[in-house]
Every structure is written in structure tokens, then in C-alpha cells.
Length: 190
Image 1 (cartoon, one colour):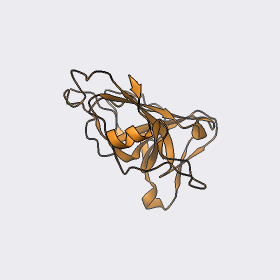
Image 2: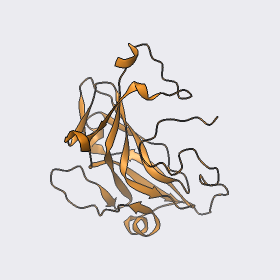
Image 3: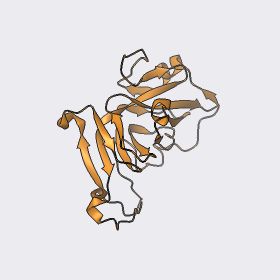
Image 4: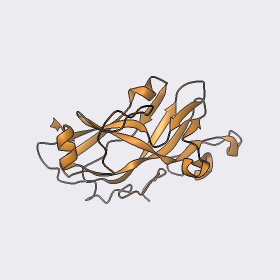
């Protein structure tokens, strides 16, 4: 298994819109890097709150409901950021849309700029032949409110190319998160 370099990422991985990684003053970096691709967080967010449940809700991935979130679109608010409450989290989407080749697995790790502020990005691996916008989960591990800037870098994808093609890809399994158009809440197949 090999890690793809910048040139291979540009040639082998479908990323729309694709961006070069260059200095952008005052901006958290994004675009292709030496051995990865720094994704941008989009403008649509779902900020976790227990205010609607009176503090009595239980998170159940098999019966997940939207009422535990406040939806914010920075395009409609005119802000360039959102605030994650202390010890809380937000779901959001990437700006970029991906198509992962059949012989590639992508791993996502948070950018150090946010990690050094106590903000942790979590995404499960992007399996071979997965397609869509990535839904990101960002946790604020601090006791203070924290800013996330829309349309700026948030995490890096590392692409691993297998020495053999897998027998069954995510597309072959008709994966439930295939072709997601944006921020997608948890689902369990029935």
C-alpha cells in the first residue's frame, strides 16, 4: 500500500472543486499538499444542543432526530464563522465533492491549527468507490466557545493506494452514505 503524492492526487482522485495549496493570508490553508488534500468546511452546520429536550435526550444512532441540532447556514447569516458551544460538537459538510477510486482508501485527520485549539475533527475512512460531499464532525473539547471558519481548511485527507483492487467496494455494497449531496445525519439500514 502506498501513500499518494500531490501529483497522483491531482491525476487519480476526482475532487471538485480542486484547489492548489498556496499561501492565502489570514486563511486556514486548504488544497492539495505534498501527501494529502486539505478539505474546506462548507457553509451549512448543525450545532448540537440539548435545549430542545430539556436536557433529557439520549443520543441513539438507530433513532437519530434532527431536533437536537440548531441549523445554521453562514451564507444566509452573512457571517464567516459559527460558534461551537463548550464541550459540544457540530456536524458540517465539505465544500469539495469526492469520487474515491476502487483501489484507494482515504483517511481523514484534523488540521493542527484547530487541534491546537482543542477542536477535533472526526470522519470515518472514505472507502473505495465512495462518492459525495463529506459530513464532518467537529468536537469542541474545551470549556470555552470556539469558532469554525466557513470556506477554510479544516482537515486533511490522506489517500492510500492498495497493491490489489478490492473484491467488494462501497458502491458494490450500495452503501447508505453513497452520493450524499451535503451534510447527512446518521442512518441505520432497516
